[in-house]
Amino acid sequence: MFAKPTSTAERAAFYQRIDKESLTPLWEVLGALVIPEPKSECVPAHWRYATVREHLMEAGRLISAEEAERRVLVLENPGIRGRSSITHTLYCGLQLILPGEVAPSHRHTQSALRFVVEGEGAFTAVDGERATMHPGDFIITPSGAWHDHGNPGGEPVIWMDGLDIPLVRMLDASFAERYPEKTQPVSRPEGDALARYGMSLLPVNYEAHSRTSPLFVYPYGRTREALDTLFRHGPVHAAHGARVQYVNPATGGFAMPTIATFIQFLPKGFRGDASRATDGTIYCVVEGSGRTKVGDAVFDWTPRDIFVAPSWLPVRHEAASDAVLFSYSDRPVQQALGLWREETGSGFRPFT
Ligand code: 1HN
Image (cartoon, rainbow, N blue to C red; front, side, top):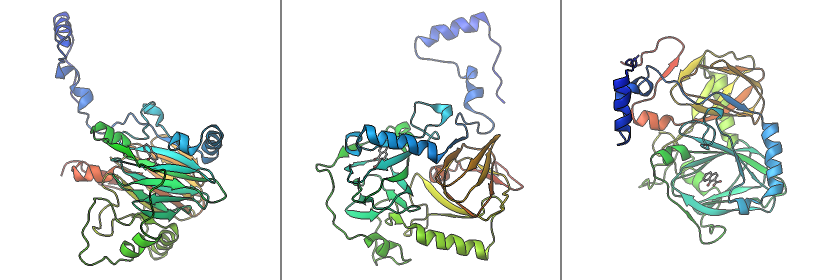
């Protein structure tokens, strides 16, 4: 759209001279800076669970959760290797905690989500309350909250971590500290947050002390029931199936200030319309099998697989069996800044 002017020897010499003073001519780079529509360096990518799990189990033999601080294999977008990023703004990892292990308590300004993929018996502790993790549970560690994990059970437990690490890094706003002890004290019984904030009731005079949902565990059983009802009573979206977003019950907004989280049900035989949005999205398969086309890539997925759809590439889901997909993106950030755009079905205007 913005064409580069022709180069001349005189201009090139000028650029070289000013380069020494950390100056560069805008007209040489404008076309790459301000592009007519998003064209991400990130690429569509798919990680099969069986493969990653094998490597994660090997990591389990090489290093303890305690020595590693967190025993995680980071899923790096192949288009931007070396930046611990799955999209430009978001991080994704798979974390393993073995029976008897503890991942020590710490806190940081980065917000984190956990989506449990395998195993029973581990817990995560957030600001004095423990949550026993079950597959499919969505759990939040708010910015600034002390958190540690433990596995007093008898089997390995694995979950997906989603954090806003690249975003916070871009803003140079990272602070972190260790808790003086390995684990934080328990100050509230398990289920306290769910009773206080997860029953469509709020304590009177409730005052938010954070931008993150006070409900930090969204158990899968309840979510799954809701999805089932949504699907059975319809309507089902032509592109997204029966898709819901996790909300902060105190505001109705997204559960986290920087990360949106979604879950969707795709009935057996679903062949979705294409849709695209400016928020690159990470999907984790919860149930079922199917196929998703992202741009020109085609991913055949089965439970616990993770795949990523970069910004603005068309996404089309098909389900071979009843399927459930969890997903997350930076949508709250884009919406807060008035940048978010979505095109689905017909009709789309970037400027209104
Ligand atoms: C972190 O605190 C966790 O608490 C997981 O489990 C992954 C990646 C980078 C920075 C902090 C956790 C993380 C992390």
